Length: 161
Image (cartoon, rainbow, N blue to C red; front, side, top):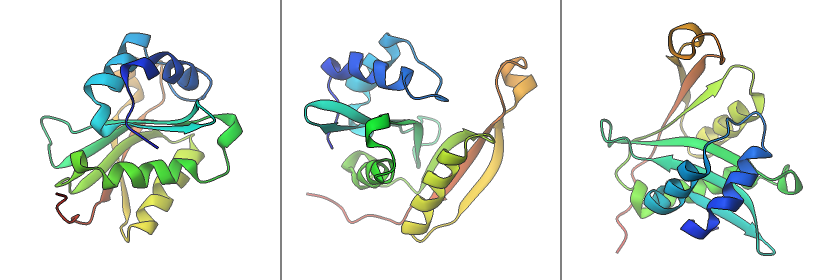
């Protein structure tokens, strides 16, 4: 596992496209995540191929949070706990130090993501709370399911040198 580089952009775009039900992003969006947000994103490689991806960022309006935008795992690496290991890697990053809460949004019909973040909360001795964030009709004009915000308290990490 490592920080992404700009050169990873095309492979990340392909992985997301192959990872339904994730919403595809533009290649340019993924390129910006791989470059400008590399400190809060994770790439997992196997045999030189990208098999895992987490995009995240510290929202400027809520710097106490780390927001996980997407988690993608290649079909060839599913069922191995890679998503959880990538979340643990992200939570341990210096760029996340000082964050008190990990947040993400998940649709109700995505049991794999609810299980992933629930397991992360349990591993970290925390609970997961759920609240509405982006409503189907109000925010997506009826074209996308409601996105629920999952919030998990993070334990303070020791400063790194």
